[in-house]
Length: 220
Ligand code: HEM
Ligand code: HEM
Image (cartoon, rainbow, N blue to C red; front, side, top):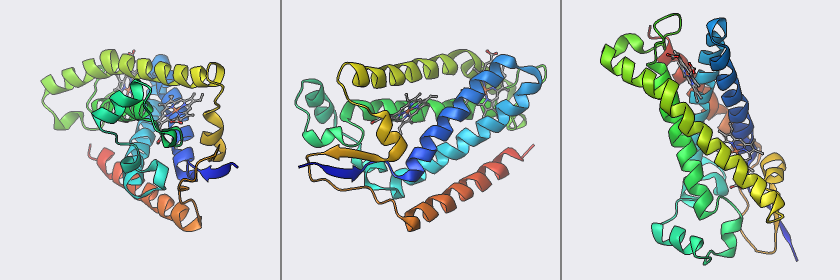
């Protein structure tokens, strides 16, 4: 008998696909440069809002979106690598996948944080540049435009590569649950809460994050 489990609640799915669109917008606008940098900034603020929201949602969201459900001990990760994973690891983020999720969230935060202090000394300067000594601004700009973007690109390629590997080598479609929210499993496991009340809470949290970001970037 197989059960249908709500694994990714609607707010997590909207977060994910909005993040994908914004990161594509950021890379494209950075490549175009010039006038497009105004959009680079807008997409950057959108990513910051999304990341702040995801941190709060990691504490308050549906079961499988909570950090507590996918923070694993080094012993569990090592065991998983040796093939001693538990069946329920296949429901949310597995021990190895969780490392990639935290790495992507951390690197995105660094990319946005460094962007706020970046200055190309021609036309585009992040909104917090005037708050930092110029040595910090140079460091942030170097990291943002030369290093961070490559690390992020590497992680995204690894991420998409893993999803393709699961699809074509292991025969598991991970994208579908990230679209419709559900997985079928023979296990009896908890579903993520995903009702009108929790979605309303997510919308309120998202608006609060957007307001915070708007205040932060209006300091110049
Ligand atoms: C995930 C978020 C972000 C990504 C992936 C990203 C990506 C990039 C990339 C790839 C470049 C390099 C363009 C080149 O090769 O010259 C760049 C430049 C830049 N970004 Fe971002 N960016 C992000 C967020 C932000 C934010 C939030 C801001 C500021 C509000 C910002 C401000 C800038 C500035 C001022 C530059 C020009 C630096 C220079 O070329 O010297 N970025 N960004
Ligand atoms: C800019 C590109 C991308 C970024 C930054 C990104 C980031 C992320 C993040 C942060 C998560 C964790 C979700 C959470 O718990 O909040 C995630 C999960 C996921 N992403 Fe992406 N993603 C990108 C592109 C894609 C693409 C193109 C696909 C589809 C082909 C995809 C499919 C998925 C799936 C299926 C999961 C769930 C993985 C699992 O079952 O553990 N992502 N992604």
